[in-house]
Image (cartoon, rainbow, N blue to C red):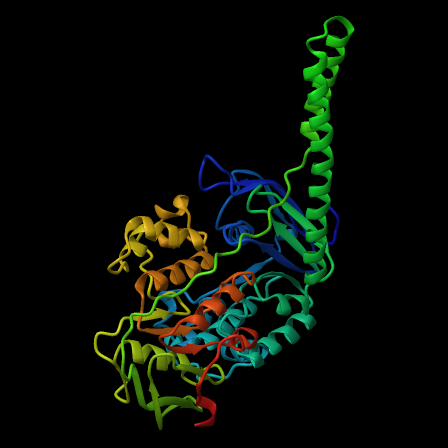
Length: 481
């Protein structure tokens, strides 16, 4: 093994289901100090690769080798609920309990551009602040290999820019899972591509966009090669059928051609299928009429203190409100208080069905099966067959229906959440970072569906390209109140 290879997968097989391995003889190596993107469709095994690297999972076959016992730390996608009641300091103590812990915390907090009181509970932080804490928690362990799983989720533009700058200057090994193409292209030096259909891995050098272009060119070459082979196979089969009935030398020639056909069949390649994209969809509207949402005051966080500010917002059908502001200003708190009816300054019209997309999927019961989760939001006029058809449009097929939600990837949980919104037929959509965990191929379709929805909408999103595809007629910038 070369001295500068820090991580190697050698013919790694892993399977949850005995009938079909998720990873099938996966081979790749990562050099020390390099920055690689782990790419693949939802459910292709990206998070599983991370768990195999950390030792949380073990391969069914093959080996995962880490050079010289290099240390590993993961910045997870979302904060584990068991840590929400800890203070920020106690959370970091779980990672590193020796030395001057306050000094070490301050150092990593500076690295992720975050300032919060150390006695603040983790659960009281915003989604963006928690995302930065997750990265800082990994950094305080001083790992030789840093694993980042969707690190831009919930981060505002300033947070993403700071993270890019940090990664460009970081001198240790980094593996990243992300659906944010522009973010990845800023620092990645290569791509490890997982094919969800074959379970294989391929490696590409260069930036993210170069890798995506090379994958597209490779698919085109494979299609052309197969087309040529198909023509030869067809011609030979016709000759076999013709000569097989002639007898003597002609029959021997037919036998030879038959063997050539078998060889040509083996030379055909399994053309990589492009990431499947969800179907176009609409979110039906409950049809409530009147003042769907009235907001007279909101709680804004300034210098870590809550301040009540007066506003005057009324949303009726077809009204759309975009809530903006930096991480920690109180956006998600506003949405949650509205949903739970705990904001004295805001009300939702009685009997309004609220379709809530939570950035942490708190609306999903992880112990439910996918089937039961979908069935629980069925409304009049939609039967089980309709439900299955709608789910299939979100790539939720029969093989997923019996799984517990806890077994889904984060991207699959996101698509399940959208399928539930369609089935719910809400009178109000409340969307908190609805592009989190979603494959970038799906995002234009989701934006179009939201824009066509003719009920009231309240949305928080840090993705400018997504926001500009939706026509908002109300804005609420918490930073300017």
